[in-house]
Length: 180
Length: 354
Image 1: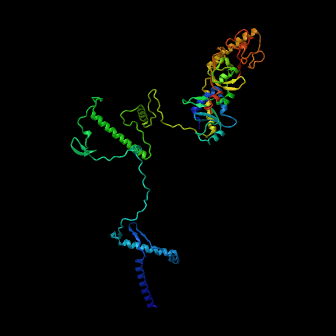
Image 2: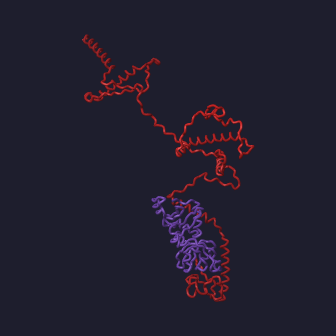
Image 3: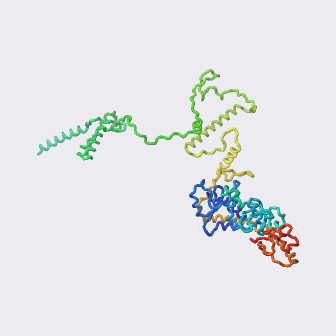
């Protein structure tokens, strides 16, 4: 486990800012204690200082997970968000998409969201903007990338993709062994 | 009184004489063992404990030491003497007692790279005879060195191999190869020395090999570049030249539990920098906004003709509003949303406020 280097921090923040914009500040600067990002096994974990200090008692090869996994740094030094980060991203999300109950299941199976399944979308969403996907009852389901702007969404046909799937809570079951 | 005193004096002188004589000749039950080379004497006699207690230890020890020293000095006088600068000097023989050495025993030499390899492979040294039969001269000659047998440096003719370039000087080629072998051997020797002394082996640009690989050449270039007085700081670069990898600073990570305050500050600064790099005006966003304005205007125009009904901003679909949630009826298709049947509410899809 180690702190992130400047480059890693930057790539991660760039990815996070696609979803929560400048709200990253609220993750770093928290009134309820010191929280930090740490890299372990190429995965970025977000944890409180207290947890971190406890985790130092566990040897590196035995430590599976600590705090909340935000994502992993790929071999090409890109950052990939994991669904485990949803709990922290959802409250700060700037752009949201609500899916209809009918296509909720499809999304949770890892499919993109079609226009026909789109319930609501935040105004002003631009193309390729990171969005957090909610069910109609405001339960966060995952996140994706807007394939079309809000304006375009009105005009496209029902079978075209409006949100690209990135991660969903179905992964907790589908990729149970790789999520940490 | 006077006579008495004279007798006394004489007697005393006699006693003194006797004492002197007695003191030179010391009687011991067992003879001492001497090692005059180290000026050493061993007294193997038993210590008389009773006498030791009666005589008060100190005196007993002192007399014993004196006697033994006397014996040692007697032994020294037996040695051949000579006079050096009016001083009598005895010549000490070689010592017979082995003493432990002053310095620790030297460590075995660390094996060379070849010795390591030979041990691993189980290669053993074979003794070769020094003299070898020379077929040409019909006589025995040394295997190596001056006037060696079968000397290939003294050949007056070398056959040109079929594959070789006919214009190549085979003699020069042979000499060059020999020189390179010698240089390589010397370099390996230095490497062995450096390894034995645990010094870092200095990297050389190019080891003499027949063919350099790409990586070897790259390494040579890198070494040559930094081999200037300014360690290559002002070295010119070719256009599009790649910087060398694995040279320079090793990356070092921050401590796991360091200063959390400064870590936080650093991240906040980074965010600030990232924020400032965003363009103020997002063109696509601005265009979208413009389009929305136009949409709204046109919607209002059409609304006016159908009578006013405020837009419900919410999704919950109060009353007759056919929201997307229900997903039925005429409000379904967004593409064909501009039909005349929608009670004037053009956008079927509601937009949530963020």
